[in-house]
Length: 125
Image (cartoon, rainbow, N blue to C red; front, side, top):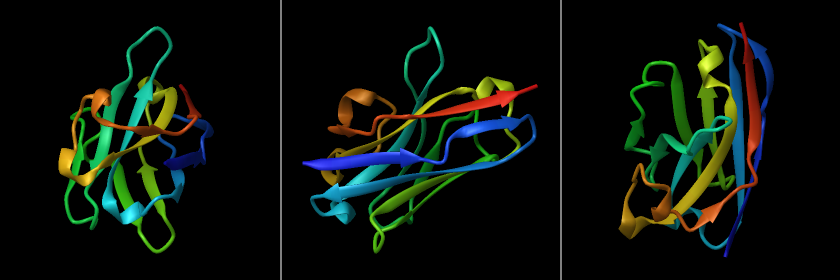
């Protein structure tokens, strides 16, 4: 079992920045690929960014490329999402997720075994 707890969400004006954190506990954090997803009201949950175990390879949705950065600190069992130049359309609940390394990073939420409870990000115009 892996427990994930997100933090760092909040209300920010368009153009602002937020950094989300996801703290993991339980099994070996470094054995899991990590990802961030988001879900806006009335919409399905969408992939935002993913990172491999060593942190060397990262992947992003086209909508956030150049604005968001995913990173991880395996010593702290934490994955981060730095969000810059935020837009109102980034408003959503943000979830972190974990999958065993052999599954790789996927844009499908079905691949991920463990999920946090989510943190709300609201971007005002």
